Length: 79
Image (cartoon, rainbow, N blue to C red; front, side, top):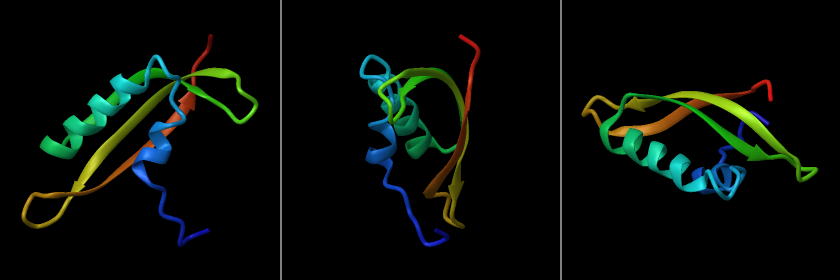
């Protein structure tokens, strides 16, 4: 729905346990410094399968330069 606002920690929970810390580090860096991210990690889908993904995103800042949201996308990679 248009009103759905995903929580950051919920999104990070989809990452493979071995990749979760790296994903958290990327997000923390962007939250702190702004800018963009690009990573190639793995997520675990609803069926429990590990899926290699590539993610891209960027921080959206307000007029004071404070990060207010992160926008990003995933795409599956060839295995």
